[in-house]
Length: 332
Ligand code: AMP
Ligand code: MG
Image (cartoon, rainbow, N blue to C red; front, side, top):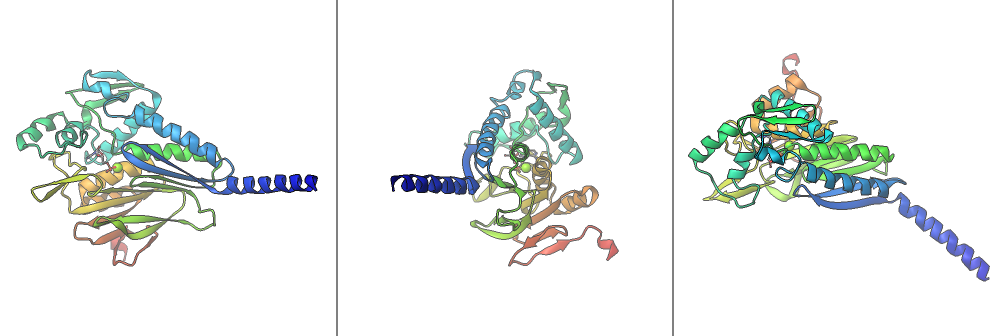
């Protein structure tokens, strides 16, 4: 009898153990000023999540604007960095050029003047902004091997691209651990790995800029990054006027492009992150031109008046009305 009980116990433990290994494992991490949620399904899920967490902490330290590897640029014009940082700055500079400076990683002094770093918000004077704009210009940054060079006192802020890069790195870790189904959610940045464990595609909800609890629709996604920049993500109000964290590098003021949010859907999370920021600054007309001329990604624009526009390749479901933007309207 005792022997039978022990055998039953061993079978139970084995079955339960097997089940828990095949459950969706989840981890919440706070880094880069963001609550991050990671989900992974598969027998190596826990190991993948643990490694992903370590990688997030490592990149958070490495890419910190002040304490990270390029923080020294606040004091000296030349600094040695690791391969990771050099690679990311190179990618970021490419995006600055491609977007004709709508994305500009030297926006740091302006962000600082508005108090976004210290979270002590203030509206700077026009004079202050125009004097700080002299330090803004990605042309002042150069990468040569592992050395970053800064001219004219330019300093870096990789906040517009770092989370996309981090997401791409986590995806690599998931792939290494053979995770067939996973979700990487870093604030407004979501990346899906494979399909859901039940075999259906992931549905990524797109937040309603007017209502932090609600969403305007969902995007079907499989092995894809869905990355949103919105005027509601980091902002403050003064004298009835709202000021947000996406700065137009031409003016030094929060971009007033008529948009409330831009979502980019792409296989390349790093590029998608830079693009969500850049297209927000450009506004809809220039953003659509950029999409038509470059491609390789899809976009959801939400205007300040609540109207929704999606490019033709978005697999979108919504109860709200929306308009579809065609790639070649002339071919109709
Ligand atoms: P995101 O949430 O990806 O749109 O990134 C916004 C963050 O990127 C801000 O918090 C700043 O750190 C930085 N940023 C703001 N404006 C720009 C800009 N025009 N180009 C590049 N980075 C920016
Ligand atoms: Mg971005």
